[in-house]
Length: 241
Image (cartoon, rainbow, N blue to C red; front, side):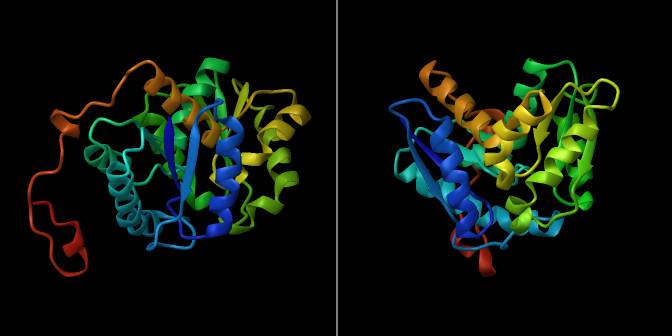
């Protein structure tokens, strides 16, 4: 099984962190191919960044389809471009790390909190919890106010927020709200005594489960292939014929 793990930002060092976490989570025999888009923002810290990350994500999905990989992980907590990626993936699973982490969190506990980077991204986490059907299970979103590209040095702050979140009513598990936090999960879990979910590992496991159980993603209706259409200007390479 070959999985393409896409870092939607263009920082290769973060891709390396994501790749290590994905490989650690993968089952024996699963090949992890982590990629960095050739276009997009250095980090994703708001709606503008997220919108401009999507063309790079879709380019990597198209390449993965051409390379006949078995599934995709979108390794950014905003799950940027996930629905569009599913239209391109021709029935292959495409799972974002926020969707995966929240699903595992509700299997582990009745309620969870998200610990994220900047407070300006908290609204996106709440939106995704509602979109994925977990509005009543996501009890809190806390931000450490550390930029995405510096979060790997903020483990003490992340652990402190996790401890704080666990004092809130109904919070029994922690979801890490950034791919750059992936390697912290086991240590923060040991420190807090609570389930701490890294979305990168969660998404790898869920894609593997779909592939191994022969559950392809829907490729009809809303997730049918994009309609033939001309795109112009900078988007001309995305023309569908």
